[in-house]
Image (cartoon, rainbow, N blue to C red; front, side, top):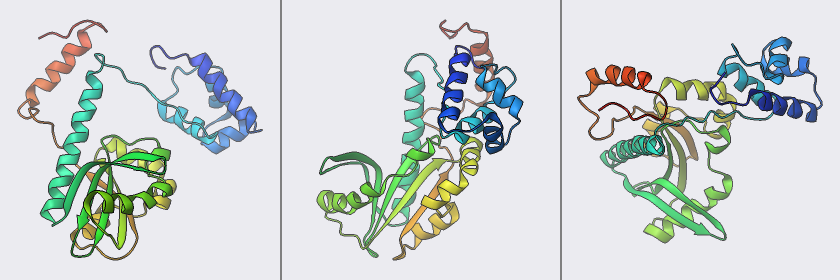
Amino acid sequence: MLRGMDTIRFGQKVRALRRRRGCRQEDLAAAAGVSRAVVGRVEAGQLAGVTVRVVDRVTVAIGGSADIVLRWHGEALDRLLDEEHAALVEQLVAILRALGWEVAVEVSFSRYGERGSIDVLAWHAETRSLAVFEVKSVTPDMGQCCLGWTERRVWPRTSRQNRGWKPVNVAKIVVLGDTSTNRDRLSRHEATIRAALPLGTREVRRWLAAPGPETFAGVLFLRHARPAGAMGRGRQRVRLLQADARTPLGAASPK
């Protein structure tokens, strides 16, 4: 299925989890919406021809998760993701300031052993509204997509300590890059997301333009802004991809 993946070990893990839950292959197949034969192939490590989506459905059905690790030129890929994250943050900050919000970026907090960092913290003085933003260039694991209720208690304290802001209401908004991959992943976990973040991009934008007193939580999609220096490369992209495809793994890319 994937180069370097230990499919046998993966299948053994799926079988072990299924047995721990006390269910048969037929039960897992029904829960995942696949055939029993597919479950049998996954557990046997025979993943040739099995799509990533099917593997994800099987692992989610038994309470697990499957992650694909993409590596490219050492730490270069991490730096690329950081650039995309920074571009989304910059775009969000520009939107908020245009709407009259005061903005703080990368706000750290520490309270009774609870430590963390808030990507963007925004204050609307007129309505005394506080908005907490978690920015993701790619959709994370669903369990990590929403900050916990414990942190929700920390936000107002953090705003008072760091900025002197004393909110009467707090909004929690997750900001995602507007890509088909992110939208598809959220649609596959819609019930989970809607329970914690019930409002969509349109509602979030309306609320940011005119904050109300209600408790507010939602998802805001933003188009990926290209990192600095990325403009004007349209015709080069296909050639670069073709060159990378011809370059053996681990070899230097052509200049």
